[in-house]
Amino acid sequence: TQLLEQSPQFLSIQEGENLTVYCNSSSVFSSLQWYRQEPGEGPVLLVTVVTGGEVKKLKRLTFQFGDARKDSSLHITAAQPGDTGLYLCAAVQGNSGGSNYKLTFGKGTLLTVNP
Amino acid sequence: NAGVTQTPKFQVLKTGQSMTLQCAQDMNHNSMYWYRQDPGMGLRLIYYSASEGTTDKGEVPNGYNVSRLNKREFSLRLESAAPSQTSVYFCASRLQWAPSEQFFGPGTRLTVL
Image (cartoon, rainbow over all chains, first blue to last red; front, side, top):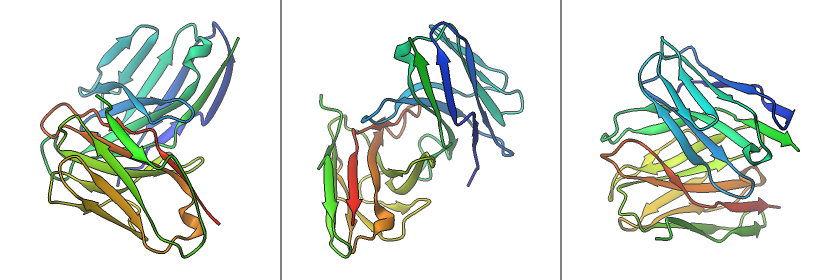
């Protein structure tokens, strides 16, 4: 089982600030996903990164996959109160069509953006 | 489409009682998963079913059993509940041969006294 370390565990910032959340492991990932979870709801997929060095942008969110495919980061520019939530990274194990496909989640970063 | 639905939303049990958590999806997905989420622990995989007729253990299967009733439904059973099983339980599904998004249900909050 791959161990995923997410940091920071908690983050409280003011509206308009920038922030970065990290997801690290000693293992190499085939791919990695970022999910966002709001209180009382299930996680929702934000992005999947597959290629080492890959950068994906989703409006104010920028996701980066490390060159060695052992780490990833999520950067939010000009955070808004609507960005508040739990951000989870998840390492993909197995092949998409295989019977052993599953996700291993990090412990999450709880982000609070204050107005 | 309702997506992934879970029942009940909340449940309180006494130690030793049994119950079944129900999960259904209407997206024609092949694979289904059960997770538990505890404070500061992220989501941990309990059991999964890659396709109808198959089930496999995840990271924390002890104390649980599952049934893949048909392609739509995947249930999780606690035979003799323990306080350590107090948690929020999430069911998820995905289309086996597609890029790998998992779709999650709204969760069941279970308290065992």
